[in-house]
Image (cartoon, rainbow, N blue to C red; front, side, top):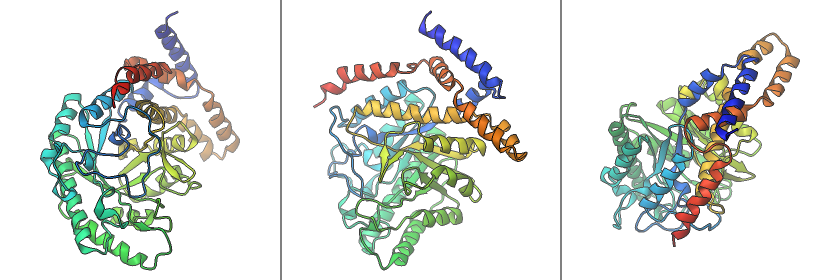
Length: 422
């Protein structure tokens, strides 16, 4: 029997098993089809960017490894991204940072970037039907070397970064208008201190004032939506981060913008999936960054681990997939970068599909009747259902490699493309 026939046969058996516990697999796949991920561009080049004067990675960020084949220009980056999209089922977006403009070898400082520097990306997105999201880049720059940007007490530096955010928001709104889909503009800053900090209030007061100024101009939400992203700590800011979860939660609620929850930006013992139902009591929409934290490092390639699955389960149980924008954020230069991309993206998708196949109505019924044993037993039995058969069928239907077949595709791309790069 051919592999395609085996996949279809296994899928039909899986459907019957899921239907026996009240799950309509066809309805699940229709819902899954409408869930897009915003794939981050920076895995292709280790967050280097294409500025003429870009220096070493800063702001508490670090990429380890030196695996051959790193993208060194926009053409190589787009070629790599197109390969990634060809190995991942479904329709997805692209998440750009401001350092990836087409600057043509000229020095264009962050407070000087313009729409013209990103026209090529808009054209590329239209060509491939890929919506674009955007990020201000408030790190890896001489004006961020002291550890502060939007909360800097150096007024010249603070104004510089405010202007940068303003220009990024203008570019984001233009992306959204050009492509007919809202561009999510995210702001993350590395601001903080390594050791005991006295004026925490003052720095946060400055951050609030800077954000208010940078976000003062209103754009239609059909074009762009602002988000602010918190972090617990960074390398060099172990004792104090200005943009904490509490700060940005309050700011997002009071300014009617999106809160960005990054799965790797909390304490290792915090359960990020548990936060979602609390936050959704007060906000209508979220930006979510999926990544994998390992000890104190937050940007490992996503796997289908308990944390990622719980995040997806909570979104499903709240019927909140229509209220969340899901982006990916990881970078690893110790392995094939395209393989990291594809494996991580597919793992995020598998976590979501697994969550959608949960017999939620049955579980909720048990819970509301106080049938704790039945709830536990059904949760455990659902783990053993043939989820993989449904995933394989979904990949087959989208004409992308089924199961482990993508591994050989990545290796072939390395042999023919990545290995030729200097």
